[in-house]
View (cartoon, rainbow, N blue to C red):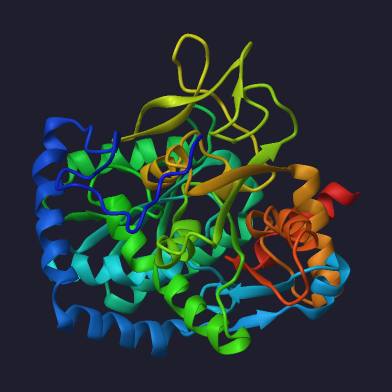
Length: 406
């Protein structure tokens, strides 16, 4: 698709980026979403809110995170210098704490005493349970049974932090189904409950709100790479499930047309619907990614030929989702961002390669971005740089990978 110049990426007042986004919800959720939108907009334009959030990000979460020059990985690629934005070093082990702290402050401002959330890989659940413990809020986490099985360590961490973890056995028993249950809970308990959604998806204002809280990643990375190399990177690369870590890195670089924005989806174990979670991939015979509405927002959604929501597969629980955030859909259709796939095998290769060359064990989600980063680096001269968003650490995945190696 022909690239269109985009100098900024903001939704309209109804939460639409072009045709994507919006608010497609039952009537009972319209009022709480309006209340949340008004509170967020007040906070967004208020210095006191950002002052308190920035202090928490610094003193509690551990920001700023380093931009690490991966010299051995760069030498292995034999091209541009590869830098890792080390979100894995944050408290709780991933970028999710950035958004969780921001939304927890909103929940407190709105005097909500109960917080609910969904989680796939468990990192958002852990981050939510953590901030609820910090602020003394009751916490309920919905998690698909398949994800509970493969992320047992994070389930234990959530419960240790005081959260109630509810296993969802419906549907594919993964992230999509956990979000469904969380939305049902919120519709029933809107008077005292805050829904702390974990990615840049869902009904307005969530995609905008999550992006704003995650954009600290890109702001820091921009300043750090200019300090380290004296110029902007040639490319930014990040894994994309719902899309929060990627849009957080991308957004402060939107206007810099020479900087490629590359999102990496889960290519899974095959091209057929149900074998991957690549929303921008289309398969003529079995269905694929088409524009549709899922869980309150319009975006690209994996669907079968009859328009039913497609099943997904990924070795990583955090990328195992049928839709993608609406701002990513907008950037894709306007040609500003590129979206490619890494298979399960690619992710395992990236997982092991990064561990052996840099002494850093990445999350399986993050691992999807490593092989493409090497390919991109090889196409560029050595005095250029690329940044990989190192969105999470791999402690949670070590047992899963060990079991696969048996």
